[in-house]
Length: 392
Image (cartoon, rainbow, N blue to C red):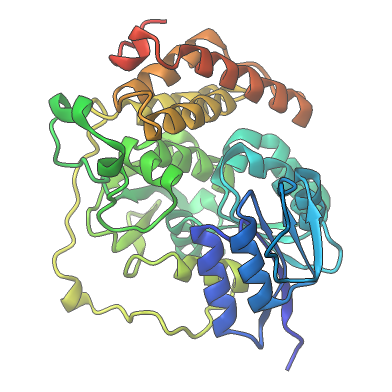
């Protein structure tokens, strides 16, 4: 039996990080948790380190105190240390489960170093775009998506070239407000948005699912991952979240990937691809699953979707501006400084104020991200943003 492959889990204390460790624990002969990283959750990372005893752990910030710290191993600090962990030459697999733009540097580092990158941090691909693809080509790294929709597409393709594909169809659960009239959106509270009907995720991605910003990011991700024009990427609402994506080939035949909603299936595939390892997850019973229903996307009621797709079509810096403004807007919404309709209003205003430009470098993207965040922060709390008016 070959030696277990060492995995760096970036964002180990989050939802995807926890699910990744669950998968690793089920296959100790195949995988080992060699490095664990977290943002500010020192106590949670300490508990994981006690359980897994990795080579070292990394916190993005130095804690004010190490009192009560139980694990006496190698602690490292800083965002640069996380990127260095992603490029560690002793680690062949990197799970990037960081949240938002903060994951971009680690994505680039892992791919440039030739890693197998299990990418849950879709924002880094969406924002980094050609920089990420160039890093993969330069370093020879493998980029394997963790999103259930893109994992499904990858499996449906089965190694076939996308020239054989007429279109792909991503499914969306519709989020918690699928049946709400838009007239009620101003009454939405954070706890309403966080009550996702089928998936258990972190706060930011759950709100993104509620606004459909997450689905816009996934459309851009599919465009970049599979080299498909935007006109060949469709989205339908599928409330049961059983069918994760469909691929329609040029001859009209359509292939789909189905399974009960759990992130551990695409996570396991991202670690083991192209193998399908045995698992202990719930077996799929088509009779038990019941009717598979699909609906049109309510694009007019969820403007974050069209804003994101148009940013993807514009390319260059536009996806980065969209992502940065959205991260600020979601945080303001969760802190009840912005109402739900104010999220797309704020994002549209920032996009309108920063026309798309070619991406020059990582440093350029960092500057664009900072500028977009600054403009978004300046607009949070203004009458236009809080009442959902998108006037620039």
